[in-house]
Image (tube, rainbow, N blue to C red; front, side, top):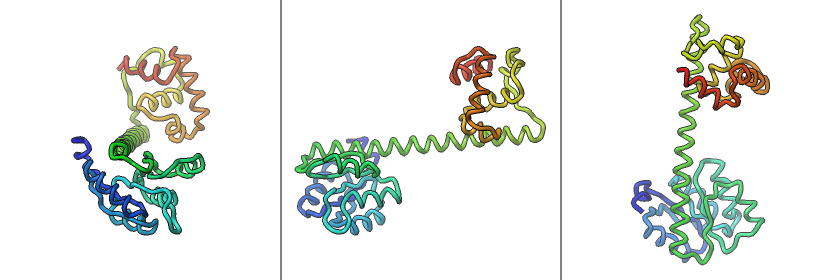
Length: 233
């Protein structure tokens, strides 16, 4: 529970049966969640979620009115990435198919018990936090990769060819200029699709160049090629 408190989880509960909504609120508060609001309809849910921007939504699937829980969740997904835990009396195949397009992180079956609710809600929060961290790390990696490629491009445009120790290896002399360029980009952690765009080739053609590089350097995969270059500095 200490880890959960550091995350400071906030919740909006969407449930049209007031007694169940209050039970959910009290149960989550005992588990350390901060309940920001209770919504009894789809329209009210959208308003509260927009206002509070919670870290989790507890959503009754069978809401009465013109929007049920899945429709509300779909609208939430189109405007953000808030995880959803559904509360329902049963989950059939048709319902599972409908919720697949929403940011579903789990289900709580009615009548719920505290332990089940706490476990599902806590896991949903932690999964959402982990996914957010991975997404930020991926964005930083892509930005760094783009920056390195821009620097290399500028250097080439002014006549400076970046060199590394592996490029002086005798086997590299057997590579064509295009192959050396592709290998340099790959060793600098560029993806095949990124390389293809940078050198104005199709990904298929880049892969054919890579096959030639593998054969000439006696390696069998991108991983082996990168390790080959790293061993040589």
